[in-house]
Image (cartoon, rainbow, N blue to C red; front, side):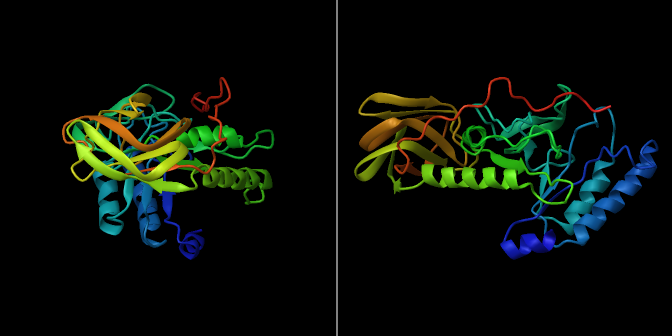
Length: 315
């Protein structure tokens, strides 16, 4: 897998859950920590550069691990890897396994959620800059089952808008079947999803930004008809924007909270040569903005009513 990622130019991230009840040493915390550190050292030294190490909090509520030893391995062998949610995290869990963020998406927090099975969280002793990551499976569960089906393209589109479109990283799980391969049906859905994303975010028109007290004016070379707007915050001094309102000719089109590294708004079809974005938050500004005019017929995607990732803890 590491070789395939290198060949395709994809960064490799690895998951190593601390909650390994199958390990013979799990009931002996000191012995298990030794075992876990050995596993982690092997993963950090045998597969080239890693972009992320994913430490799952599921099942570990009330269990203490030797995080200083664990993180020391990462710092020694993979200092550039992002660390997910536990130990000394650099990114955090969004708090659910439905792949959905909610407004506001705060990059600075002093706690991280532990698991979907409880409401517990871990304190960080101080505020940290930890952008969240949405993790979700293309199927209802994390593993392949013959009686399960992939999510629809519409469902995946809704997840995209409420993760990437909210300034959050999206981690989509695609489980192999009993052949060790990705099922054909899942591949088809992924290709159709990608094609629809490409269609929706096509015919981009970049805006010229004119910042002023209280907001920014987005100017286009000529009047453009569009139904998607992308805003990118200037994060060089941290996340600053706490609220924003998008308007055209004095008519509000969208009222939202944070922007972050990429905020996407799906709007009613609008024609304008200029937009105004009112900004709240000390020192908040945009670094870029653009509209998309390639799919004016695109409908707002909806998640199936009542669809939830499993929240029952395994026995």
